[in-house]
Image (cartoon, rainbow, N blue to C red; front, side, top):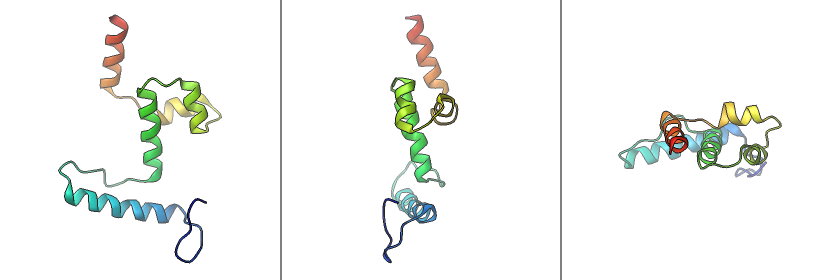
Length: 95
């Protein structure tokens, strides 16, 4: 457990999800481009992994950082790609 609540008890997933809902609500009230309504710490984990993969990080290093025992978990479930990323990679290979 990383943090304790006001009563000294460990915070659990539902505490973080509630906090994130409040943060997203406040952010969306003040910003033109809204965040997705469903935002959790796990969403940030996926974003972190995808960002590192798109930056060209070695897949085995990324697997280690994410704590996955299997590279398939990292590449198939976490390192999401976009059509823009695919086009950029094709252009890089052709050049």
